[in-house]
Every structure is written in structure tokens, then in C-alpha cells.
Length: 514
Image 1 (cartoon, rainbow, N blue to C red):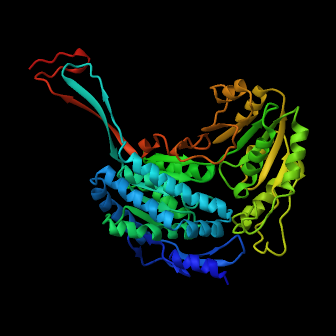
Image 2 (image 1 turned 30 degrees about the horizontal axis):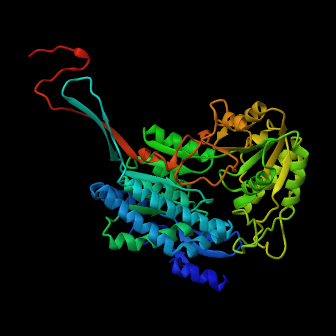
Image 3 (image 1 turned 90 degrees about the vertical axis):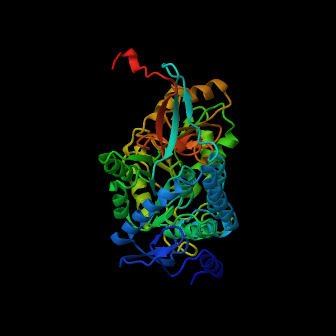
């Protein structure tokens, strides 16, 4: 049996032993499909609830309802759409403790990280509310007399949002809140590994949608596996697909969406490096290296996968790093004294073991870790020791992303060499350098430096703020979501020319007399 606290949380958030698979915003539709999945917590190995997967019939209902909703929602003034989003943020504030705990229990991240994820949702609601009054176009000087040119931005239509298990609610909010103030409707397919957190979110926002008389079908959710994702990617009625997950998944989504000339935002794998120079504040660098490597049990797309350390401080830094690793507390993430929780499931544990074995076979040296924890408190079989491995950057296993707390360590002589090592992977999400040398910092941020979508100085590779556009280059997919001007991806640009004169001069000086 679950603890009383967890049972109370599930009850408050509307999570039942058996959960429906489709919601069109205000109401859950009776599940017609016969296929169900059991959601098992990686924290204690116990079943939380069952979920019925959506059938084709339910999928069609959602798509059709979203089309009807868009016709009405796009006509609502953007600041009024922003007011709805503001109210959603307030509902999330009211339920932050419970939703954060559910995220922690269902996914396995620490309670503080679960609460932090919900706070990201609240922050993006605030951001989007302000954005609703700043969807600016341009006026452009025309080459023709008594003409004016301008740009307008119009809603796209339906936005499909496919999210991953490691951030089961925040990434939806990054997309959905921006899309909503832009006038789009949203269709969310959460990870089948963490659907209960998504169900809880839908239950939390329902009172806002009902009380504000929002059209049915603006915020939709469909529970399913990759088959639903493929349906969405192929569906011409969904104008934009925003997909977060592995590079393999992203390539498939990209092919399907591109084949119908649709739009996509792809947030895929990372192989992030932290460069530590001999001019660094080593105490802060150690903090960043440890949290970036073991936070969320290494299951962040921005987790540190590689530490590139200057040879003059290499031995000293590694000795301190191993010492800290030995002091980390691993266990139930709902216990605030623990630093590291479990991996999402036993498949992830197997991937962890396989990667370490491959590293050894390829000539790497294990410095610490390489153990699946057993015994009291580890009954789920999903707890592992974070692992440090001394390796060369060119090794095949180092070039790949393993979603686990495995960090490869290597040394360098010159900063140019370090940056070349950092960039010499297929992924390009996040990067960071620790140095108090202004020239080194600026070189790292220059066009000769990091080739990633995110480049930080004296902070780690993770912990992106919602005010900045989030995303990466190369096999990370090139997408951008959340802050800055990423809202433009959720709208269509239209160039307008208005002739307010009495003549009609033609472009390029062409003469055409009638």
C-alpha cells in the first residue's frame, strides 16, 4: 500500500486507480480503448494506478474538437488569453506542493526538483501573461510612394506537444502557455512512463477553463505510446509538432512532419561538457560538476556528460570530486536528506550497466561507481551509484548519450583544445566553462567557442531559466521553446502592403499601361 500522504496527494489531484485516456480541457472522455498500462513508481516499485491508452476513435474526437475550438479561441483578444494563462498559474501555485510530490514519486527526481519543476510552470505562466500584450509586428519602409509595409503574426492552429518522462509537466507548460496566448490550441501527448503527473495538471487547470468559459478543446491531452505520437506527426490538422526526447525519436518525428511540410520544434539529446580551467573557482566548479552530473540521477537533457579539466589541476580536482561522490546520499527522493533518487525504470538501469561495460571494453577507467544498489530502501531495483569514468573523448560510448548518472572525465592542455573536444560530438545542447579569466570566458562565448545552443560561464550546464530560449544545435534538433522570441515559432508571419495613394506603381519600376 502507498503511504497515507501519497494517497492523499493522489486523491486531491484526481488520480484514480483507473484513469481515462483523453481530456478536451473541461471533461474527460470515457475510454473506449481496451489497452491499459500500469504506472509503477521507481521510488519503491509499487503500482500507483492504471491508465487506459487512447483509441483511434478518441484521437479523432480530440482532433475534431480542437479544430472547432481554434475557430473561437483565435478570435479571443490576446490579453484576455493571457488572463486565462495567469489564472492557470495561480491554480498551479495552489497545488504546487502536491503536484511537485507526485512528479517526484512518479518520475523519481528529488522532491526539491519536483517542486522546482512546478515553479517553472508558474514562471512560464507569468512570462506568457506578459507576452500576451507584446506580440509585436513591424512596420517597414516601402520603396513605393504612398505605400506602407508591415508584418503581422497570426495563430497557427493546433500545436502537438510530445513530452518526455524526465520533465513530465514543465516542458508542456513551456510550449502550451506560449502557444495559448498566441491563439493556438494544444494537444498534449505525455510520456507513457509518467502520465499521472499530466493527468493531474489537466485536473488542476479544468476549473479555470470552466469558470472562464474557454472553448472545449483548447487544452487537450491524449494518453498513448509512440503510435499516438506517430499519428500526431503525420496529421495535417496539427500545424506544429513540438517534441522532446531522444535523437532517435526526433529523427522519426522530423521525417514524418517534414513529409507533409509541417512545422516542428525538436528538443533532443545532449552530450554536455563542462570545461574547468586552472583560473576557475574550484569550490564553485565542484558544486556545479556534482549537481550537473547527478541531479535527476543524470536524467536531464542538460546533465553534464563530460568533464574536461585542465591538466595542471586535473589530479587535485578529481580527488576532491571522488571524495564528494562518496558522501552523496542515495534513496527515496521524497526524503530531503537524499541527493539522488532512482532511475526511471529497470530498462534505464540496464542501459547504465551496458554503458559502463562498453566504456571498460573501449579502454576507459572507472574511478568510482558502477553499482546497482540493493537492500532496504532500494526494493524497486532502480537505484545506482553515480559513476565517474576516465576516458578519451573519441571513444564511441563517450560520443553517445546515456540517460544515467555517468560522467566521463578527460584532461586538456590549451583552451582551444578543450573547446575542440567539447564540440567534437554530434549533439549541441548545453555547455559551460569555469574560469575567472575574462579572455577565456569571452573566447568560449565567441564564434570560435562553444557550438551549443546554451553556453554558460561560471555556472553548470543545467538550470536554464524560462526567460531565455531553450534548445540546441546539431542532433539536438535546432528547436527553441520557452522565452525570448520563441513565441514566433507558434505563429505564422504575414507581410502586408497597403497602398493609400491614388496610383498603383508596380514593383521594380515595371510599366504596364491600360
